[in-house]
Every structure is written in C-alpha cells, then in structure tokens.
Length: 345
Image (tube, rainbow, N blue to C red; front, side, top):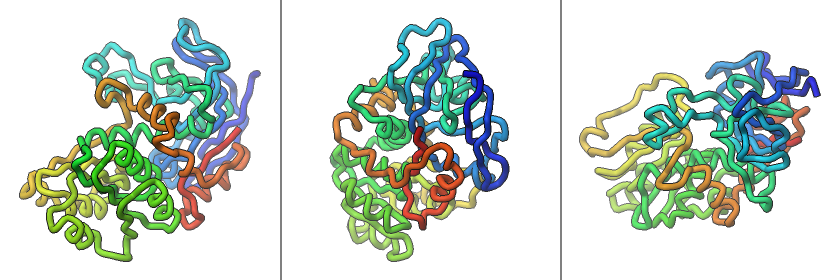
C-alpha cells in the first residue's frame, strides 16, 4: 500500500478525512492496522482549539489494532497479534525510566513519533508502548485499555484502601473509569459527580454508592451529611477547571488526598487556603506507568479481561472512520447522550 485514509483537523471544530502517505515502521516500531479508536477528552480540547491542532497528522491515541508489519529489531511481537497502545514511547535508559517513572521519560515521543495516530487506517507505534492482548479480548475492549489505565493510576496514587471513602469529580470517561477502579479496589464507599442523565445511569451501573448531579444539590452539604462533617478520604478530580478543583478541596478531609487527572488547558484562579489549613495532599497523575510492581496498562488489561470492570458499558456511539465529522459532533455535545464515542474500521 502507498496511501491510507486519515482524519485530520482542518480548523476549530473542523476535522475531515484526507488521503495521506502510508509510512512503513522505522526500526523499533511496529505497523498496526487500527481497528478501533476512542475520542478522548484531550481530542476534544484540540477540536475546540484549546490545545494545539495538527493540520498534517491524524490524532487519536485510545487505540487497539492488529500488528501488520515489524520494524527492524522488533522480535517481541508477530504479525496478527492484537495490541493496545500507550500513547507515548520511552527510552528505558534515562534517569526517569531507570527509576520506574517512564511516563516522564526524557525522550518521550507521541504514539507514532509525530506521525499519524489512531484516527488513521494505520499507525506506527514504538515497541516500548505496545501491549499484547488476550485473544479473548475484543477490539472494543482493547481500545478502552488506555483510558482505564489513566484512571487506574489516579486511584492508585490516591492510596485509597477498603477503609476509605473515595469521591470522583466528573462523570466523563476518566471519572467513570476512576469510579470503576475504586470499586474494583474495594473502596469502602464511592461518590461521583455528574452533569448528564447518561452519566448518572452509567455510574449506578458501575457500582457508585452515591451519584450527585451538579446543580441538583450542594456537593459539600451532601458530603458533610454523608461523613458527619469529616469529608472524603480521597478525591479524584477528572474535569480540569477551577470550580471543580475548589469542589474537590471543599470535600476532602483533613490530611486527605486530592488527585488531579483532568486536562487543564489554561491558568486557573483557585482557592489554595484549604490546602494550608487542612494539610491535604494534592498530587498530579500523568497518564500511566508503574503503580506497584505492574504497569497500569497491565492492570487495566487484567481488570477488563477478568470482568472486574465492564469497560464496554462506556461506549455509547460507534462510527466508521469515514463518519468522523459526525462522531466528533456527537462526542462534543454530551446532550446527545454520549459518553465514549468510538471510530471503528
């Protein structure tokens, strides 16, 4: 093959299919037939112009596919293998990699080293970011490994145990998967804030003990009543706005933990006084790496393949790549009932 179809941003709230050159995998890389790819909240930030857009390369990183070609030096995989893809590569040699923090690799590169990603018929990915999937896993499940790994890490960084009450701010994909990961970890009690009816229904199906619809009730009052004024032990903030950060700080207990995993795209005005007087810990969660002895991707694969997390409950819409315009329109408008929108090939 010499060309392929790819969905590329052409302007603010504009994306379309273009015919582009197919590039064989470089040494250390693997060519992948991208079977299913999710539209991430970060993709929507780019769609709305809040983050940079590439007008030459297709985005898309919540991707699952089949190996079709091996670059020089790759022996770990074979053509036909089903794989999920971390959205970056890592070198394995720098200080961060050697310390186990490969998500902070000094030579970290995007999924296909600034070439086309999952919103194309084919992508290339470095062997360091590829995970072979069980044959029993569907492509749809495989495309959900990446966002679940993000959420799993956030819950892991909160250090919540079966003794803890965990709150999640935000009912989108990352928030819902954080809820699922907290339930799977055996959290004592879970709470999630949502904005739309489909988010509330999904949260109940995933096992939330408490679902708070923003605007219907005061979150702090609800948590005060629930905890006799103590607050939540851990809070995962998945939205990335000032008001949501302030909500997280208002409900965390003294010496509790707030984990920030939202896609912050602009400076915010926030109230930091509660951090001082409550001595709560605030920590950022960057993608995925190792949480304990296993990678977050391995944990996400196990959670899905074992049935501990029914990940496909999140997928509300599926479109062929050719319908990318409609797929983004639906994904960007949560009044459509969307939670996770997938492009399928």
